Amino acid sequence: MLFVGDDWAEGHHDIEIMDASGKKLCGTRLPEGVEGFQQLHALIADHADGGPDQVLVGIETDRGPWVTALVAAGYRVFAVNPRQAARFRERFAMSGAKSDAADAHALADMVRTDSHQLRQVAGDSDLSEAIKLLARTHQTLIWDRQRQVARLRAQLRDFFPAALAAFGEDLAAGEVLDLLKRAPDPDTAEKLSRSEILTALKRAGRKRLVEERAERIHTGLSSEQLRLPAVLQRAYAITVRAQVGVIAALVEQIGLIEAELLKRLGRHPDAEIYLSQPGMGEIVSSRVLGEFGDDRARYAGAKARKNYAGTSPITIESGRRSTVSARHVRNTRLIDALMRQAMCALRSSPGARAYYDRQRARGVPHNAALRHVANRLVGILHGCLATRTTYDEATAWAHHIERAA
Image (cartoon, rainbow, N blue to C red):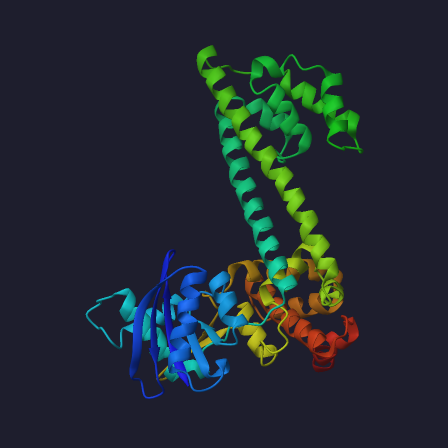
């Protein structure tokens, strides 16, 4: 067997190849891209006696064309967490010395001695990877929109607080962006007619209580208010118009990404199972499916999936002391989606609600009780995926109902 340490950078890869005894067979730096990958193939071929499955590669990433090519070549690729690699490196240099070549050596030795403790890069389908990419981009754009809306709110609060009272909380709504683009300051806003506001509401797709909202906005914008000096007010108006443009672009792109995301979710064979789970709509299902992946052999059991999700607790024992606490090192995108699912499941699943109420009755705080529900829902999802069945309320909570009885 051969063990390869690959310390990657943007433009190159430091490579070390090691045999089963830990002897260094070669070490070199290869360029990124096709040329470098061909050279890596040649180096491995020079030293390998067996097939590609006898080559174990350690690298500190699980994505990108290079990793995809390694997996496609048949090598067993292990994505090592950078924190794990840093701790392992201390075995060789307690002084804190570090170099790319030394990192490649540590990665090679790590897969040689501890590959059974490491997670092999999952063999997820291309469709699953596409869903993950789109779901992450969708969520990132939403976070960006929230930041921009917060900045817009701060600008309006400083010179045009009447707009906040008139428009309400949703500053990213279509009619709000339309009206602020046309009237970004008190002087132009008070000149807006009620019919112009009504037109903006209809253009944005508002159908309910349109007349009442138009009247409220018109009254708020035309109300008497304190003004800043004209020069300063015009400067604020320019910044507001710029913020509105950024938010409008983000809203448009979020919609486009969401449409592509849901289109791909509908094509995935696991979509029906995910969508059957309580508290899971299309967006949350996309995020959870993308983060979990669809490699059937990725999780040894429900406990492994819960550990990866970060919903299961960890135990810290030392001497007589033993504490159980939540996991803080976890996939934040996945835990966010699962906690959203748990919150929604309290309204749609009697079993989830009863389970949450029992935790609260024991004195468990709200967030911790919600995490217990999320942990249980992950186990239910794992069972549904393993048996290829959709969610059934009675089956999912039967054990807990019997125990409570």
